[in-house]
Image: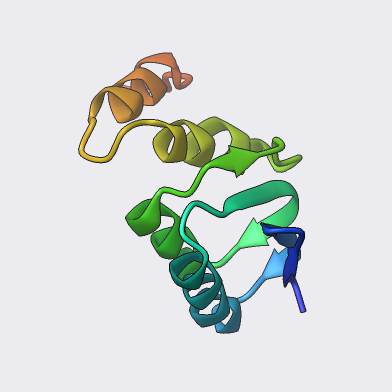
Length: 100
């Protein structure tokens, strides 16, 4: 299983499929303030991402996946309802030009 509890820290490892969302939700709800180690996560199903966005647990580690590091981590570390993290991410995203 890619969601594991060790010493009051929830570890996300490898690919975290939709089935992991319910376990993650339970572990975070029953242990208020548990930290989530995301440094070993490769891919997170959107259901897992939704649990993280809804509960905003403290994070440890940095994912190796560039997408998670670039887009998800700033959102998770920003206070809930703070659109600044999304604006900052959008402002620094590479711009593409359209051919005429």
